[in-house]
Image 1: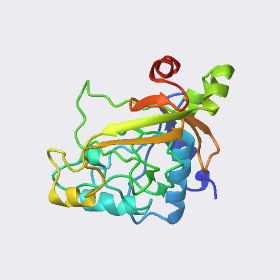
Image 2 (image 1 turned 135 degrees about the vertical axis):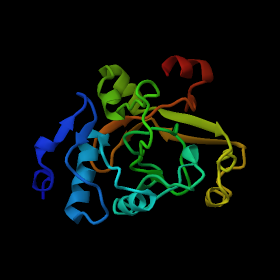
Image 3 (image 1 turned 180 degrees about the vertical axis):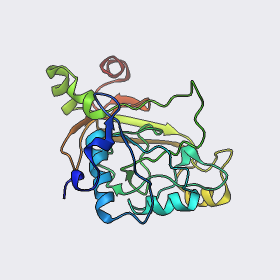
Length: 226
């Protein structure tokens, strides 16, 4: 089965050279055939970000039923709202990684790393407040060869100090979902900064603001390398 058997290529409009495509003339629903969800996954792998516009027929419950066809839902502690909404789909082992981290910065949750982040634009301002995406695969490919060789062998030390249950708008349901995940203490982890996507085989440069230093390097040379 190919994407063309389910969604016409004429209805797949690229938004930029590196990533992003809009899927036109498709009403989202949990009643869609399994082949449609296979096509969605392949389009995400190909374009990294896909957009569906004019989906006002979906309410909260319908959207969650649709997302459940993609995989298990995980609460996103950085986007807690009063109705206890959930985000994202399947999970990979903690050593694997999704191509795009949109709202988190190298935070590894106990439930595993989410493979797909879902944003629902309920109110889009006429200007400003834009969301930008970037491709870790493109970032790796754009490195000069000597820096690629360096990155292939570097592990980062990443740390964060926050409390996932302390969000001001968090409901009791959201707080209990993350109970014990963080106590506000500093959490550190090490990981290779180049990861291989388990489905596409693409090599991805995975860096973020939480990087403190690289394994084997002190803080100053690490910052220079970063």
